[in-house]
Length: 628
Image (cartoon, rainbow, N blue to C red):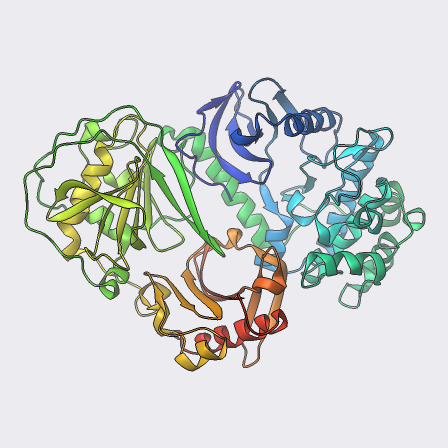
């Protein structure tokens, strides 16, 4: 999934124009770029806060050196790099779907596709091992299903097979637990045979939907890898012999990549090696990539969802004059279990208070939940924005791209201009500016220009927050807040109510009996789409609408709690201490899903072993109360 550029992202890296964000991890981020020749590239960078860390610089330089040694039809070739002050590495961008997401969204692969996957990955490993390298992190997320076959990416922890420098401390385990080899799990020497073991685990996941050694925590998973034999009953019989050989505990007993290719033989040529929905997604991605370079207004943003709402022109407002100074915009992402809320913040000079206006009161929380945020923004702005507020963007509102945020807010974008609004959020850390807009006291977060209006109370403050992607002025943010405040009483409602989770009160979804049985106290407190009950335990309930690709499932494990209710185990640092669970309520188009998550955590009381049972009991009861 390609995301919009943050406002502080460089417009150009080397000779490549940046277009979007492909992903980020602990070490760095990957941007989508376009070269002078029109080729798309994936540009990997170290996070800015790590640039002064000599170890990370050394590791990145080592990745550059290793990546340039790898070539082949089933890897992403390096095309350019710079290891200087702001290092980066550009490789050919592969239009395709990561294997983990393909299996999660479309199910396990059929036998013909599994053969193509095995053959392509064996070819990639043959090329990697032939260069004297070991990948060491072959996992579903590092395999892209392209239109003509698989590609192996990310050589961040690859190393030379012989005589490589040791960049990790003795005894450290480096890699992804579910797809490690036994020798890697034991911090022993990792050879090409380790990649073959990882290939076996990856093929099981592609064939069945989960790792053959999956467990409730990383330590248990590593124990299974070292000591347990894989259960291959669910693997198609045609591939059990090959996969079983790859998963032998003894590295010397595993086949080489070349032997795997010999075993599979020459495969029939297929114009579409993957199931049709995967190819449809690849084709859509390819079409969108072309639109990025053909439409200059779209080069700054990538949106997988358009929310069409007919604009209703409001009365023309009297223009305020704002005096602002140069600022950098900072993207702030707040994530609750499964998703985050994107908000850009800016900096503005202090202004004298504008003329006093009557105090206004926000609608109730229940009324705010009913507002269609994208429809409201369109209605509030009317047909056009003042041209001087959207330098580099379209003044014509109909040309702006619209997409939902994970908390049913809205982000509208044109070129370098972006406006993000969140409804019913916690207004914490905001302070009065002394200004008013349509009777509402304007709030600002710290020294930045993250603006908001709230319900006017000293406790449980909630309201509406708004930010823009301006680089040199906050005039657009202040104008947008003014127009929203002026039209709040006529804001459009969700057309999908009562089917959507957006309008539900999360604190009303769980009963007092269920909450107290989990060790928490009632009543709960929260904001538009979250609720917490605190006591010896803390129960947190979240309603959200994340992108399907962003759901961080832990080992993609499902939990059947009976009565046809299937929950998903979320990614957690310590599954036994946190044990979050998610329920997918409904899909919205091809990219989004409405979901409910519950987490139970303890400070005292019963042992951790009861956490999962309590979490599942609370969520299962809530599922029965959701709209049909």
